[in-house]
Image (cartoon, rainbow over all chains, first blue to last red; front, side):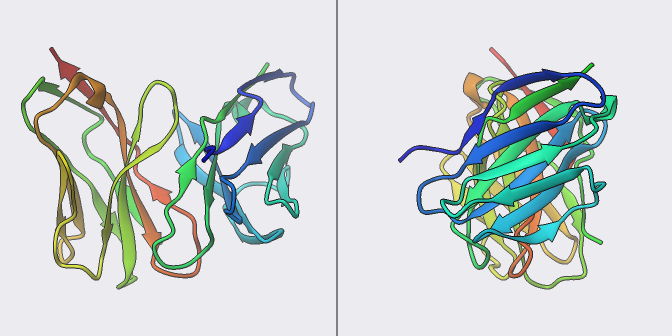
Length: 114
Length: 115
């Protein structure tokens, strides 16, 4: 069974640009969550999607958005990039919200904003 | 608000020895999950062990075991017979039992294994 796939693995963008990251969950999983990992703030929850609907959102500005498609693949978008957006973005998939659903993580996308 | 605290930024252990990583958390919920994740240099977060708060028995997975003290809100990870491959960042994480599916993470402990 293929794991969680995140693309691209690395990205370099310029301040003010926008970026789209992609996450393909494990086959059969319908829940996708996104996390931002930085040395200063650690791992912070961005948002969760289940069956194409955003279920939960962390404390991030509106420049961070996401969506989920009918095949459960998810994208997150960051507009008007700032230097502070440089981070490792991790995607986690699970079968769905509820009891005992384990989250499986991808290898992340390393975003560098210059 | 849920918070997870790991007070040991770095730990080291001799190969084949035992090490314990500490984690405390704060929550007003009575039912929740606790996890330890490992993040090697490859950056992929790997689940090491999971504990349901409603279970009094401490979880074990081969060389990994936890000491879960619900009243003290403490959740430590013990690694026995440490191996070189155990070297990684270890994150303690919390999740409510139902409803929101997101994880709250601690700041991590970097474990070094000395040959």
